[in-house]
Image (tube, rainbow, N blue to C red):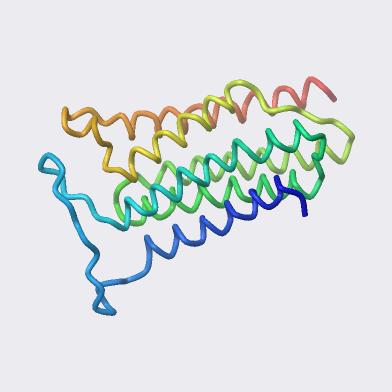
Length: 193
């Protein structure tokens, strides 16, 4: 297993830890999670730890592909693992935030629905030998989502101190861009038929 694939696997493992930290009922087993007051905002350590893991996982997403392309060791296994790791990381966090009432449930529904449609289109086009690369809209969508979720883990600080919800703005932008990029992807496939 090459280094990029190890980085991708580490992202999946970090995602599992994020899920456990965010969903484990610590209070039911007598563990009290420390909380901190930052400018009147109460911050729970479980979100800070999960946020740090999310940042590290997001960095591995950038590094694995860059290393694979730079060393000319791009593999089909690596591409598949990378796609799985990306979806598991972002979609798990979206679902958990929606379940906890931090985020509107429509966001993960739209985001995951779009992913499933695009994955089906990719499989269909790949079976016909057509490869449609990710467009700039998809890349902007990913950047908005990663930054928005990172801010959400950290209670939208420092923007929360001035009452500006940058985290939600970026996540909503990413959700809209996910639909736009899905339509663009569909149009590219139709054009290449």
